Length: 118
Image 1: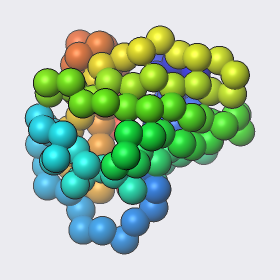
Image 2: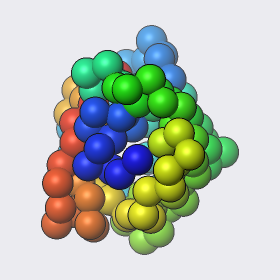
Image 3: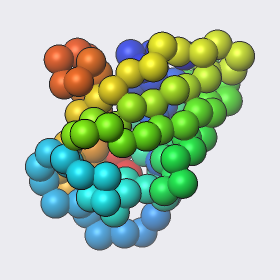
Image 4: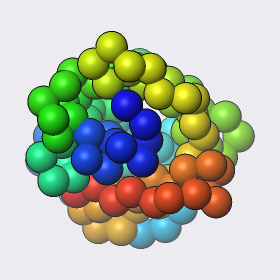
């Protein structure tokens, strides 16, 4: 699964009845975990949950299992993901939130952006 494909495949997080995140760029790991971890991020028919312990799980829009891991590197979240048995290339992304949405922008903020609701 490719992160662009994640639009359809999902980088979504575990559902939580938490307060909406405040708007803006997330630049620190502690802020990323506080805003995103444990929430189910949904884009279309796909979803993903980012765990505070560095794991990713979810289901793609095609029903394939999404598994992987993330680490924080400077001001980016970097992920290694499998969609089904296909490994996507590692990618580091910027993260911004606005209310109940989060946007991941590939290639350290220079690539395609994907917005998820939580």
